[in-house]
Length: 453
Image 1 (cartoon, rainbow, N blue to C red):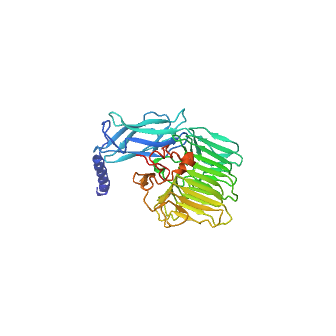
Image 2 (cartoon, helix red, strand yellow):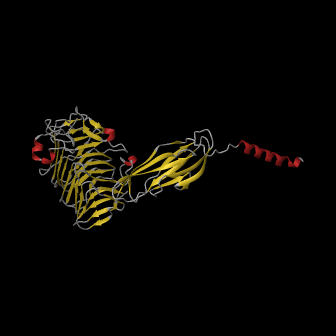
């Protein structure tokens, strides 16, 4: 008899545990709690899988529940679910203990439609009563792949979108024209390599956008997502108007150019948040106006070698916060006395969070010159013949530095400090980047944007 004690005790123990085990209740109509009421996907490219979002379902009822069904309301294959570890858009009889939770992971793969539009669906959860609902939304942009070599004159038509996951090269004898409202999204280490000509023709209400391939909110200020615009040795004509160029390794960068030729013109643009340099130009004539260049790991503008460099009504604001930076906002080098280097910076703001914002090799020959006129500058050198009617080390009072809003406030020392005569010579400067008149309240303000209440 004693030999059977262990078996009897084991049977009793199992019976007790089974009796103590709480049952899962069916069809209770219990209310479950969700970690959110909407799964919102940011802008998504058609034909490309989105990032994964998740929903957490919690049982706070105090009872063990059986969830009858979890399913997509419209199973159109544009949203894909993983329910409690299973890749499926519909699951039945899911046990959820009191105080416990399960996860649903969602991903979008949107189909191309006639127009860009908002796609919606819902996750329905039922415990026996009415369905509980979590909405899913995703805004889909129709995109076309754009890769490889452009060998002849090519135009990207207005209001179209492209993905480049291998890079684009414009050959020596070709011209790429990008019309207003075009958006190009580049994958990591991909960019636009220009050996010929480039014309970006954005408009005030419809700028051209060049950026990384990740449009989600958390990537909006992550530098280094793509390589940027590269200007090659043979490139002769670059024109950029109303463009937003952001989050690259370098925004616009000349490669090693041995000969002095060609020109580049940048107007009414925002070149922001680059891992290295915002704009680097060498051995070209350059005209940059009504443009914001901000938050770069190195210089905002770096000009070098022979060229006539004219920078008017620009704001160079370097508050780089993604790592160590020692480079000033404005850099120019003219170490070869045989070069013809002429730089003129007028009605501009050069500022940031480091003491010295200018690093220059001052011209040492009669054929070169460097002048800063009517500029607000943060710099440790304030007395030099290169400065004319400038203000130094006065806070420009930008609107909102953390959110990269570098328009000035009403009390800014940059207000009304610009050279009025400049506007008579350059019709492009009569209005700022937003189309606001520079003359209706007196002298123009320094910087890319006129103050407006």
